[in-house]
Length: 220
Image 1 (cartoon, rainbow, N blue to C red):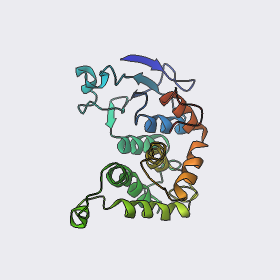
Image 2 (tube, rainbow, N blue to C red):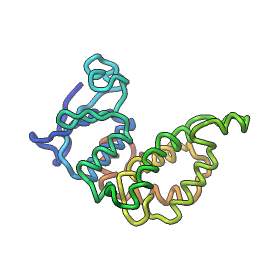
Image 3 (cartoon, rainbow, N blue to C red):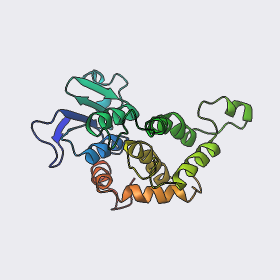
Image 4 (tube, rainbow, N blue to C red):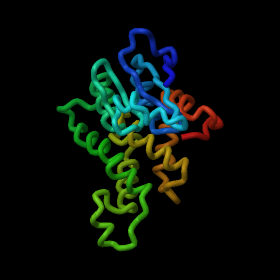
């Protein structure tokens, strides 16, 4: 594993290390770190070389997956957890609604929805049997897409006028899914939302690091 200090934002006093691999879901916390503007170090892993399966890395994340985040003595894995941690610690009240804010409930809902509902609904095949489909915790794909489209109609962001870490979490998954054509004939709100996400400078900086060989504007 090769260590690298990322961009001008990082420095010798940085407390945050992001274990990162190109062309992976490491994009999500990298984008959030760029939105937050906090110093961080990037610890690059090669998935092709199998760095994520080494005993050294498994001491950080026993699942042998990227990303993982270390902040001082705190280790956080799983993208929604990393986003919740970073936004609460470094963007509380800005990228994370405060506990007393009425938007905190929807914020948590969409954060969990991202990988517990949206991702499996998009990537797993639909069972032909409606009874079997009803037994899946994430429901059916059409309902998932309709539910998201309805909230995006009120946009511009998932919580209305305020861009938050949940737009990074769920938005990154949608961006990747649209790029990979995992959502045939997406409703109009999806590409419009994706275009707003892509226009953010922090998104563009993280994308350039995560997908360096993609033509400008073509990668997730």
